[in-house]
Length: 358
Image 1: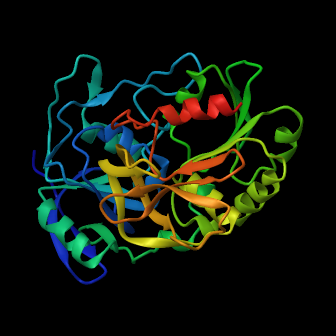
Image 2: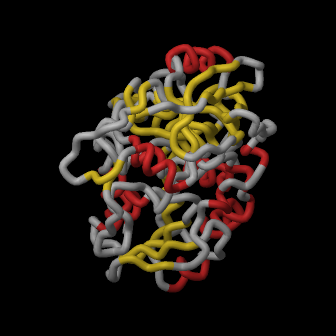
């Protein structure tokens, strides 16, 4: 298939050329890379990628197609982490134009075209990734022909507002009820909670959930999501209020950062973030190492919090905080994804920990 030429321009002036696939659009955002070898449908629909152009380091993408649009008994899309693609665009080395999978129904290109998302193939993604590792995450623009755009920094906006639910929704039925603060939740988190017999009430990111915790719900779960946690001060304030109730609180990814800010920690932007399925998280104390799936560009600053909190997990690669917990109260959070999807299932026990605290 003959494809039109496209280019990716980084803010330092570096240009990578390739060929367009999917929607013939030009987009601008933050350029990040993911080193996962599988799971592109889940990654592309992860709301944490809102505002970003995703570079896949796995050379061939699209070889097993895209799942059919189906929903489970709770009304959640099957095979995806949300109901749509959340990346602004994608950059890959080798686009597979055909696929082999027993229940997938369309190509990656067909999916991108239908959802209005541009992609670029034929790029030396190894060289591009090395550039991002050396210089750090950069702004970039993926442009097609004369359709030019300006650089745009998504981290200066509230990205969570664009991916959170707009209404309160309840899944399942149980006397063990949890509030899920949706900051861009991956659906596998909801599935993981439902699989443990919990009733899940999903609320918007800025919803005043304290009354629910005080009157009818037993625990709070803070979800993953995109961008800078300091852009959602309403969520941080509500979590601070929830502390006084003493109910169990579990945070995941952005939820870890929101919990940390509410506790008095500081957060900061990582050089190029953690986006992969093989990040080593070491538990403290004990030293046991878990292989984890991660997708985040910000982290909790070590040593910035009160002494009543402890560093629970640490990244074995760069020493960053991967989890915190309160020394006396049932509050804990992790920077990685215990629900994985895609990725290892080593840390699914953290959901069981929440259930035990109930």
